[in-house]
Length: 527
Image (cartoon, rainbow, N blue to C red; front, side, top):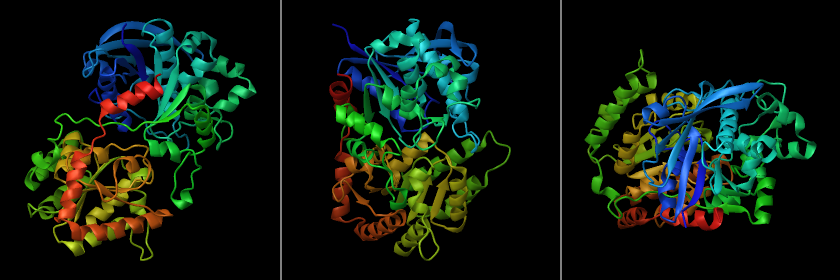
C-alpha cells in the first residue's frame, strides 16, 4: 500500500530560498519531511512569483490556460524535488500576473484599496491551481490542504464552479495561520472583486451561497478567509490555546484579539467536531546540543550586524537613516563583551509591537520606559530589535533609537543575524497582542535563551511561567504594557542566579518537535 498523499496549497515555503515572509513559510517548509515519517507524502503547490523556478532549477512541465476575468490567461507549471522530503514535490505556477520582486512576495496596495493587488493575484492562482489539478497536470491527492486567505478563491471554485467538479471528491482542510489577515474585497463594481475575477460564477450564486462568502463587518464584500472556513471539511488552528481564543469575539479595547468576526463560523466547525488545534513544530537537528554551546561572542554579533547593514545598502543609492543610526551606535553599544542583551526578532506589525507603543501617564511609551529600566539596572544592558514591516512603526522606533543609547533597531529581516541574536541574547522579548502559534520563541528557547512573552495563543502552549520562561498579561493594552514592565523589574535581579540558570536550562530542554505534531496531523486533520 502506498503513502497517503496530501497537497499543500500555500503562498510561502521556507524550503525555497526567497519564498519566505512569515511563519507560514516555516510550516510549509518543514511539514513534508515530518509527514513523511508517518507515511504521508506531502507535496506543495504555490506561485512561482516569476523567479523561484529559475532560481531553483525547476523543470517546466506544462503550459496551460486558465479562465479568469473575461478571458483565458496563459500559465506555466514547473516542478522540482522537495529538498527535505524524498516522497514530495514542489509545483510552481507562473504567469505575468503572478510575478513579484525577489524578497517581496506581497504587494503593498493603497490604503484605499486594501489587499487589492494580492487578492487579484491569489484569485488567479486559485483558478490556476484548480485547473492544473482538474486537467491532471498536478496529481490529485487524497487530501487538499489549504493555507490562509490566499486559497479562499480555490475553496470557492471547488465548492460552486461546475468546471471544477472533480475537486469535490477530494476532502479539503484549511490551516489558519493568522486570522487577522482575511483578504476582504468588494463583491462587485471594482476591478479587484469577485464579480471581476469570476463573472459567470458570480452571476450564478444564490443568496445562501453568497451568505457563506460575505464579510460580516463590511457590507457588499467577499471575505476569502471566511469563504475558505465555510467551504472546507475541516479547519486547523496552529495552537490549542489559540483554537479556544478564536471562538470568542475580539475586544480590542480590552486588549483581546479573538475570532475577528469569524467566531460564529469557527464555532460551527467546533460543534461538528471539525475544528482542530495543533501546535506548529520546530526542528531539533542536534538533539540536546543547541543551547549556548554555539553562543557567539559580542564581537562576533557586532560583525554580523555590520555585514547585514552593509548588505542591505548594496542595492541602494542612499543610506537609510535607520541604518545610519544603527551603524553609528554599534561601537558604543558593545564596548563590553559581557553586555546583557534583550533580543526581539519578528515582523514589525501592530500585532507584534502594539504593547510597546502604549503611552503611559508620563507620556513616554512602554518601550521608552523599558529602556530606562535597563539603563537604571545596568549601564551595559541593551535591547536589540530586528524586524521590518509597517513603515510608520519603523519611523517611530527609528526616532527612539536615535535618542536612546541602549537601543539598537535594525529595520530589516536577515536569517544569519536572527540566528546570531537567538544564540547571543540573554532574554528574548515577545510582547505580541495575539499570537496564533509563534516560532520565534521556539527558536530562542532552542538556542538556550529564556523568553518573556504575553500569555496569549501559542505562547501559552510553549512558555510556562517560571519553568522555561516568563509571561505577563493585563486587561487592556496599557495594562499589558505595565505588566510587562513589572515582570521585567522582577526578572532583572535574578540574572545570573540559580533560578535564572534553571529556567534557561528548561528552555533549551523544551521540545515542540515536528514528528510529534505530524502524528496529530495524520490522526486529527487528515483522517
